[in-house]
Length: 113
Length: 112
Image (cartoon, rainbow over all chains, first blue to last red; front, top):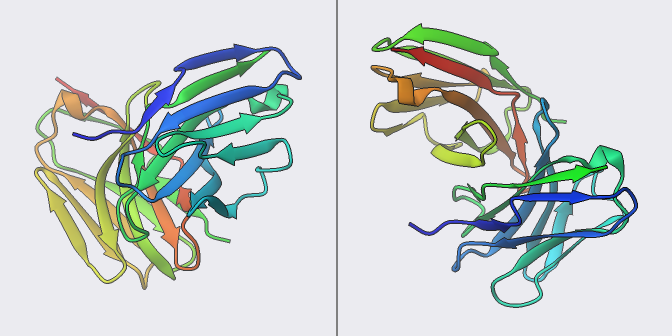
């Protein structure tokens, strides 16, 4: 069964460093998303991406964050200068249509020291 | 702003019991509602998706219902098994956008 793949599974970085989290969505999906879950808290929406542009973003998704679909298969989330509070599990998701189910990857655990 | 709440926060039942997990949302203008399962330290597995025009969806031992007017959804699990132990999340998609708003989840433990 097709699945959303995320790499790495765990990323440790120093505060102030740039990180790039990578995702390979399901191949025929058109809508792409990033969510995050801080330990013990709700899953929170970060950004949605469609037709090579951001279609919606949350208040969390400030200038430190950016997303890119550099080729036909990858979808990346970049955090320019990480802060301690960016430590969380980051989930990538994709779906074929707005009415369809979202499929989530296994997540990347980001630890900012 | 949509708020999603799940009750109870945790539930422990003996194997074989039928159980109901509750999800409520404040804004009834939802596009659809999705139930997920999350195992410790893992991603989210989609269980059921209910469109706003539907009343319920079934998959195996799982049945999800939706009552938009009262702002509620329930997930019914029949004949629970230890392998059902996980956190169950509901998430509402707003009409105007594509983001999901998640509840805090119900942590289910099924004891053998």
